[in-house]
Image (cartoon, rainbow, N blue to C red; front, side, top):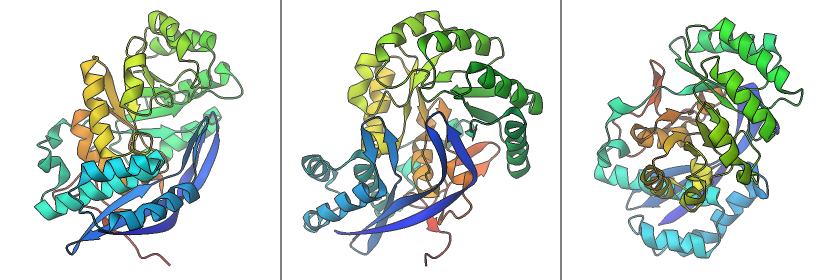
Length: 352
């Protein structure tokens, strides 16, 4: 099996501001494996959570380092390859890119799309939310109008809160968005750890009165000891993102949250995402899928698993000016994979 690693840069139509900062562009990693005349593709996007800082350079370098060890292996030897990646201490983003490529290769070899290979039902895929970053009320309203102009059938919104200006600024943004799009009734909140326990508790009641669906990552990673208090007090479901990377993180969280956000970059790929899904369900937890600054390639990979999720936030590719790939399509508020083999992802343009 031959491994090829290439970098590509994507630019956002609307820069995204969360409680930790603003992102306007990212350089991602495209992985291609070739075996028996079939190519499988994967992707990694950089991210940083606390001590976890997986830069583009770190991810690409780790993949190039492991490439010689893969030459004697087949893409079908996923268990052996997974062990090899763990022994080589590959960061989760690098493992994800390679694992996605292995699945894409297998689907292409079988001449089946992954959702069909796994026996999943595309009709169960729910609408994806479109993310509105932290903004003053007037700019948040304009972002909503811009998105409705681009995607008139969108059915759900996710609002980034945890403004440095305080919860009054968060509340003003919520009211502005709801007044702009009163027909969108599914609105979730992601504070990215930007609130204290007191603020999160106060906001949970205020948000519940305004019909918000759930709150994601209200407290900063490392403050999980305060989640039981919020779990008891909050009238809204609590989901965690930064506090949950993989299946090992789920048992300690099961008595203090209502759901988890699975991202391929945190999990380390589709293989671990499956483990997270089954572990979370065993504890009675809800599941959402999320993304970073991912192209159509990464979001299409999760779209194939989407029949298993309760909530979806797979919109990053829809906010790109120069997505080099095309894959799952946006139809009536949903991101749907097609019937092409594997991921069903194609190159949208050539890289210079």
